[in-house]
Image (cartoon, rainbow, N blue to C red; front, side, top):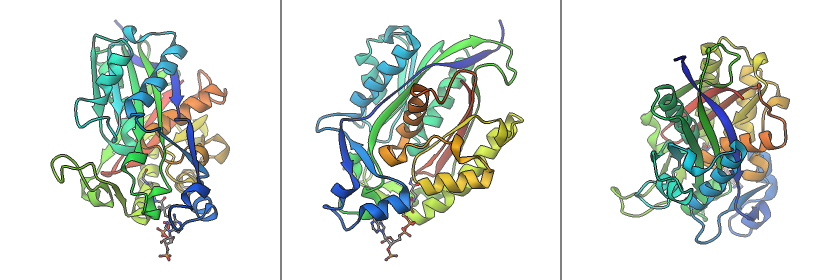
Length: 325
Ligand code: UT7
């Protein structure tokens, strides 16, 4: 038997119906459309309906990814779901998705690395496939950050939105040279010393409440540009690639100035970066798979292309993945 690789068989995204514009937020806190657009690039975000849970968004994205792969839930043997806004403290939101998809076999669990969560989940699923523990996996990033925002704090409430993105991975045997399709490598990092730069001030074992997101925005910004540039350089170097080899970069969508700063550092051309922040805002673990789904659906990203994924979030956590579509 040859070496196992994980190949992307389908991608899908889902955004809740309701759109909240910057103008609407400006009626709630002291901010303006101009400030938000200029400092972040965000024009609007989607907000989950009352009663619409993270698992509901995840199921819709998963159904689209499965349809693109020509598969059903019953064909899967693994779900890894990245979220920092689970339906409940337990059980894992992934098991809710598993039940809704009619998948009664295999394993489903959550991964928590906030905005870097999708890269973490992808790495876990990829390694389980490479190790022979799964043949087909659904990797999901899904969030309802609107539920943990302090809607009186203009420094954070303008930045985030709700959504979900999913990909289906399938095991394939093959050579393992850089031109094979599949996940070529994943690179994960965290540094817990920065816990209080970006955290939620609640939780079952601290306050017994859900809590609200708190962030030292300027510090997070500074670390994001440096850490993302470093992990992208690491992913390129591990695969003996240069920025010129990359067809598309699908970055975490936290702030358009972070994306620009990172791409300048690495001399990545702006016209090969997928940007959704203007319409989605920061959807945390959902941002990378949502952006990937959009670029696959509109034909920008096509089979055979070399795609770089990166993200950074609370913890701090950060990571990158290089993928041949
Ligand atoms: O997914 C990873 C997690 N998050 C991130 O990556 C976000 C990282 N950080 C950022 O994107 C930026 O730091 C922010 C967008 C959060 C803030 O932008 P900034 O350019 O770093 O602004 P600042 O925090 O330095 O604030 C500048 C001014 C302050 O006023 P003073 O003290 O200069 O009078 C803020 O009070 O802007 C003020 N400000 C606002 N004004 C209007 C902060 N938020 C707002 C707002 N509307 N929404």
